[in-house]
Amino acid sequence: MKELDIASKLDIITSSLPFLKSEIWITVLLLMVIIIDLLPLKMNRRHLYLIALLGVVLDIFVLQFLVEANHQTFTSFTIVNTEWTVKSRILLDVCALLFYYFLWSNKTRYGDNDKKLSGESEWITLSLGMLLGGHTLVISNDFIFAILSLELISLPSYILTAFKHNKVSTEAAIKYFLFGAVSTAITIYGVSLIYGITSGIDLPSLQTPPQTHSSLYVIGLIFITIGFLFKLSGFPMHIWVPDVYESAPIEAVAYFSTLPKVAAAVFLFHFFENVDIINNHYLGLFILIAAVASMFIGNLSALYQKSLRRLMGYSSIAHAGFILIACLNTAEISANALFYYLCTYVIANFAFFIFISEVEKEKGNDLLESIKGTGWNNASLVWGPAIVLVVISLIGLPPVAGFTAKVLIFTSLWDVYQINNDQFYMLAMILGLLNTAISIAYYIKIPFQIYDRNTKAGLQISALNKSIIFILGLGLFILFLVPAILL
Amino acid sequence: MVTFLHYMLASAFLFSIGLAIALTKRSAIVALMGVELMLNAANINLVAFNLKNPALADGHAFAIFVIVIAAAEVCVALALIIKLFQYFKSVDLHQLNQLKEK
Image 1: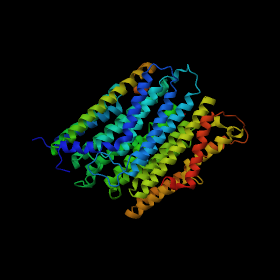
Image 2 (image 1 turned 90 degrees about the horizontal axis):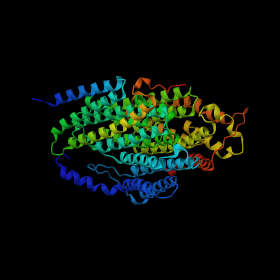
Image 3 (image 1 turned 120 degrees about the vertical axis):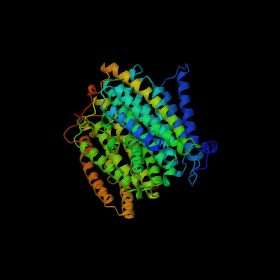
Image 4 (image 1 turned 60 degrees about the vertical axis):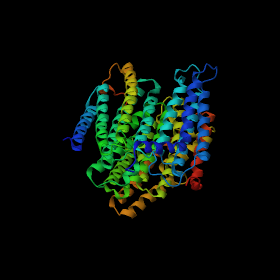
């Protein structure tokens, strides 16, 4: 490694290009959408969502059949191309797929002269940019690459937050931006410290640090995780979540409660794998504290929420805690646990946000009271049980996939405890289980309100949204029965 | 003789100033300046540590990318601040109080 000069390094970088087929296709799709939007065609601009949706489906096929995973990671490559990253990229594509379906089915029902409708190609280009950033963050094996992709996810999401064009969403966007900019700056500073210690800009050079326990090294590593904790909405960087979730457009909220989290979690897992977090006591402790604190903050604040959006915001902070716990163990089993957890989280979150958007459209607000008694008419036979399954999956109880995911995560944490016999891991496990119990108290309000015995109210959900909620709820049940689909 | 320690002290100083500005200043634009200082502190570190292994020029490459990131961030931030000014008629961060717990 040390004998490399710039020319041979550039050679290595160009030789890793053939593994980037799916990213190249996303870039082409992005340019295609811009060009089609500029053409003077007399088409309905909403069809652009369909084009993006088909493009993402094609990208899943590219990843499934054309991208070959290599079984050993090349140490000097700027990308990692293992089966694990291919799987995670497919999950990111599924996020984007659900997002475009959501946009398409929602915007079809607005009138043509609705002002908010304008900007289809902006929605698509910004979200495809986020998708591209997620893809590159997942495969990055190099801090330059990782930070550029982190910014590629962040910058479009600041803009998408302000897309509602009103006072509150602009305020949320500015808050989101300031937090994001500060946390990215902290991450970059941490990378510069680590670069000084290991004199390598790539992740594998972290495996052989000069002195593992120097305080500068630990501080650098903690600084690096800050920016990714921001994307995960984990403990020290969680303050933006409720505001943004409350005021951004609902489709965008559904998108950036899932895609950045998946990408950041997969990168953090890869990062911890290289740092060897199991033997790095201080970093492990920091991540444990962040995980437990985000669970407590999320769950305890969610208890008092009256609005569904804020409730989901706090619940996503709590879920970030569980995701962080899954990142702690670097064994193969934990990679599967993390992937399974992220899958169930993405499915449940999208189903629930589609439901919230319908509630908002019908009732004009997203308060818990406004869904009171909506589950008793015939139209709700399709979506009602599906929403109940989604909520149970978010709690983590059988018979849905959320239960299996939580079991897998706590198993992997137990394995770490067996390896290093550190009491803090045991404590974190007990507190995590306690938090699962706390979360029942607020999640259960939702089915309780839907099936309230004393009130009968109607809630019209469009056929497109109803069917996708049903499919997602059923998917969670099937994943519980046959977890082998994902593992 | 200027050693790595001097560079690191200078950059840590700059980073702290930037963080303090970003966290305490009322004006959105000044807070943005604080973020820029933090990014440039990282740049000093990167360019200085490049002396350890000059043939690879990793640090220089990274510093250039950080400058690009800073430029892109300012672009988005100024666009958002213009929108903010349209709605609030000021860029004072303390006046942003529409969103709070109900």
